[in-house]
Image 1 (tube, rainbow, N blue to C red):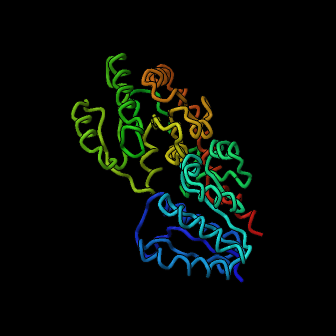
Image 2 (cartoon, rainbow, N blue to C red):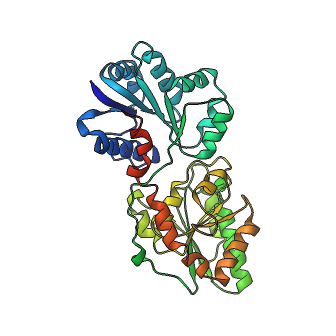
Length: 346
């Protein structure tokens, strides 16, 4: 009997680079390194309706042949995969592990009694933020472990860092392009600072996939912007450090108070770029204000502009944080984070 079976969206044989697929593949590859390649089997959820018809047979095979079963369902698959794993495991008594992808589970699970019951029956549920742990513990869950998101990413060396002491200070956003991510807040704050300072002290480059349904909003927004604010398209997930290392700071003015673990902040820190972010719970877990980045109140353009003005008046505020960002980013390398999971597989 093998040790581990992993059920998730591996997209085997297909070039996929979304967050779910990347996390699933990295968990699998890292566990193979930790416990031996021959001890880990992959079961791919890709395939739509064809997969759903095969799922009961896949689940039985996993439970029959492995001591530990790890499930990594996406938002759409959680209703079927989690209850089915619990029900089918009743005669087998294998150890079930649920690795949660994203920050949506605490609010979502409360709506569905069957899902609430099934999640309670999982041996260990690994969530990405301390805020998620606290929310679910408040509802009586006792099977939780904190396993932050991670990045298999190149982290710059401290001797490669270049301080930026004079304008223009290059800023960027690095997330989905949508209203709720605060893109317009970033634009307004940069424009406010430049008008106050009387020149192009800050520039802003906007990266990311434009949210479906918000293309017209963003097109009209960008038509009103000066030349120092521009959209720069999408960056491949493995090129983030190379792009971000050219910036003074990354802005992450999300409006989501329930924002999941923001991987874009790890991208920035890996490049030695301290971020300036909304003080939502997940961001506060990752950013130590004044040491690895700067915080401001969610939705406050005024406070974001104030923080930018601090930087304009004292560029060392950001430059001094760069080495601490590199150190923080190393905490979120896969082999460091996944020890939480591998330690449960004995």
